[in-house]
Length: 190
Image 1: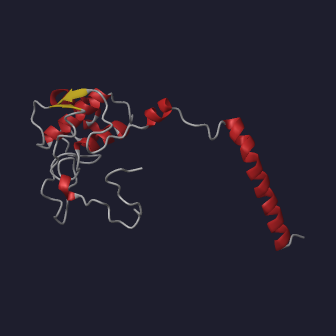
Image 2: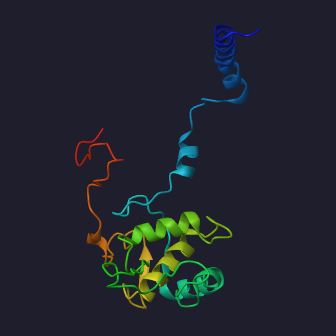
Image 3: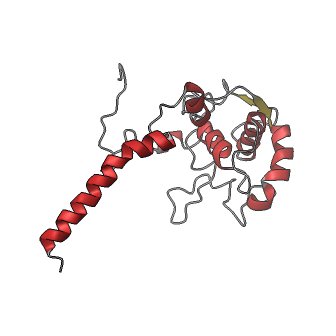
């Protein structure tokens, strides 16, 4: 018959054996192997609000219109009106209302955030499949449809940080939520 003391001893023994074998497992399965710079670069694709991290490439509103029609409209509507997925156009002036409409033009604070999201997550059925030029083009088209850039706009890594989104100042910095405990570093950061 097992007593609680016997059970604890067996549990401890099993845990010790499992822990001791992690070195063997690490060696056998390459756990803990340092990532190469090339591996890190493949995952480090974020684009900061100031445009840092934006890749080479470019796109225009005209190119974006065609790509959007072929790869985006079936989910977001031919004019970004939504259905079956999120609405992307309009909503300016509604954020303080009882029924805010959060779109690229009304809610998103940075054009680089739009670019980054499209690059990582769109199209829904094949995320990450668009080339950098296609992402720049679709981003330019969405900005155009929201009245943020004109129809002749060309978007690239230099231009993306220059665009002032309508809701850029609608976000609080630093983040006051209690789940963010780090001290915001603004200069000479480690």
